[in-house]
Length: 329
Length: 168
Image (cartoon, rainbow over all chains, first blue to last red; front, side, top):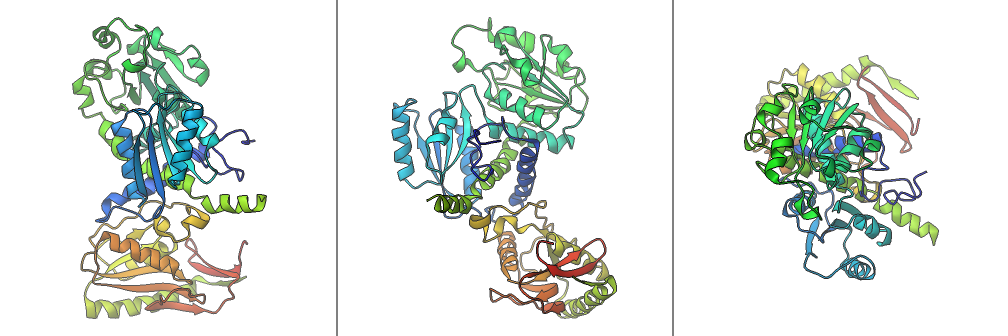
C-alpha cells in the first residue's frame, strides 16, 4: 500500500522523512512519544546519548538557514553522530544531472544520513529516490512544499501545552501560499485529529486548493481568532514572492498582524506560535511575540528533541536494509 | 507456564528489603534508581517499604542500548527522571530480571552521564542464567534456573512472576 511512497522501505518502515503526507496518526504519535523521551537529555551533565555513535550526518543546505541547520546539527551531536555542514548555496547546483553528480560525491564521503534544505519543491524527494539505499534522507525544508520536522516540533509544542489534539481550534495566519511550514503543519494537525483548523490571510497569499487540505478559510482575522486554542503566525516570505501580492508590510500588519487586542479574541489560555524568524511589526506585534502566551522559544528548544527522535527512528533500520539487500542478491 | 504468586514475590521483595537495610546502616542513605519499566515497579515497592525520603529515580535506557544498529529503537517508555544529583552518592540500581547484563551496562552508562556516583549496588528481583557480561547482582530476590528459550516476566499489577515460552 505504501509501495510508491519513497519514505518507506520494503519492510514498510519509515526510512526517509520527507513530508507529513502519507504518514498516519500512529507514526506521528510515535515520533512525538520518542521526542518526549529525549527531552530529559538536558537534565544530564553529559547531554549526549550514544545512539548514533560512529554515524555521519551531512547537512546539505542548498538554501541558507542558520536556525534550521543549527537545530539539526545540535540534534545530531546530542545523538553522538559526526556532522558535516556542507554549504551548497554558493555552488551552481541545479536540479537534474548536476544535483546527481553532487549526490555521488557526497555519498563517497561515506555519510549515513542527509539533511536536505533546498529552495526547489521536491528536492529532498528527488534525492531520496536517487540516493544509495543505505542512506536516510530528512527534508529540512524544500521550496513551498514541506518542512516536516518543523511541523512535528509544532505538534510537540501543542501537545505539551494542550495535552491532546482532540477538540482543539488552531488558527494559522498570514502567507499560507508560500509557506511549507503551513502546508506541513496543516497536514499534521489534520492527521492528528484536530477538528477545527482555520487559515486566514489575504486572498493573494492563499493557495487555490487550500480547503481540500481540510481547513476552513477566513478573510476576517477577528472572526478566525474567536475561540482559538492555538494561534500560529507565519513569516511573510518576501524572497518567495515573485510579484507584488500585498500592498505593503504596514498594511499587512493593519489587516492581519497579530496584536494584543486581536489575541484577546482567542481563548485566555491560547498559545502563540511562530516558526521564526519573526518580522516584528509585520505579522506579529513585539509585545505578543515576547508576551506570556508566546511559546516561540520553546518551539526552538523542543525542535532538538523532535529532530533527535526523527533521526533515531529512521536510522534504526540499517541492519534490516542490509539483510534485505543480501537476500535480494 | 509457571507462575509465582504474589506471596512468593513478596517474600523475595522482603529479602531484598532486608539486605538493603543492612547497606543503608553501613553506607548511609542511598539513592534508589529503577530501570523502566519492570525495575521501576520493583523499585516502587522497595522504596515504599524502606520509607526512603528522596524520590525514586527512573531510567529509560532505550537511548543507551547496544542493539540499536541491529534492531533499531526500542519503544520509548517516557523520559528518564533522576531528580536528585547522583554525584558522590551511593546508588542502588533496581531491575526486575537480570539475564545478559546488557540492560545494566546501558543503565550504568546513563547514570555516569548524570554524574560520578560513589558506588552502584545492583538489586534484582530475579536472577536467571544467560550472562554475557561480567555483571552480577549484589542483591537478589530469587534465582531461577530457566532455559534460554523461556521468558521471565513480572506482572506489575498483580506482582506475580511468570515463566513461559517466548512469544506467548
